[in-house]
Image 1 (cartoon, one colour):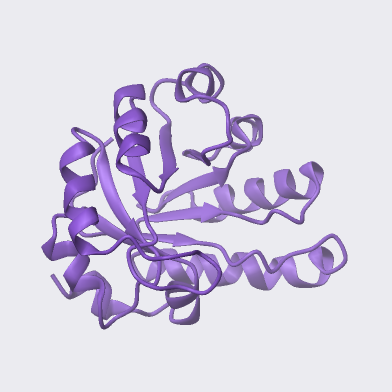
Image 2 (cartoon, one colour):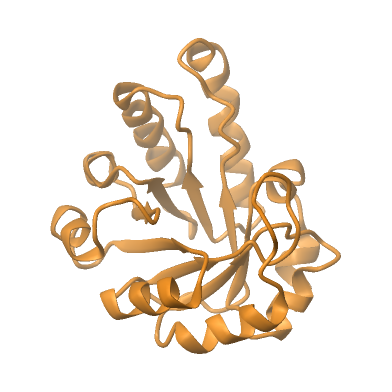
Length: 206
């Protein structure tokens, strides 16, 4: 799986709960459909408060909504739901199943993305055959600890090998170009990409 850089990778905000799912999921799906129309390359569904049933419903709705678009849809952690709902792949945390096990569930052609925070984790994900590796936090972001910085990002790009290394953490329209200049294949964000769906500065700024 290769997407020409710069890749824009939107992570959903985690706003859906069991209590508000019925009332808010429709607007949620429309928001992400607009993101796809604006050119986001990858959307990761990261709605941890939902039950497996509601996450499956949401994933299926989004997969149907994005069918025919260039935007790829990943489900956080749940390879079974990703496969059953027709999504393009799965995103793995450092506590998820291995890439090899996940590929048995989602198939060899599916996209597998992995979270990493150290060079050792980057090398491990690359050796395991991850298509995309998220690395960070590159810049300061609330609740995510000390940023790794741009020098570490450049080292991570080298360590990623054939995997596409995506910068994560504190990314906004002022600093994303610094990450691209250090070799990142693209940028991932929760806050900035969700707050500005029509963020053509990031898409066309390279």
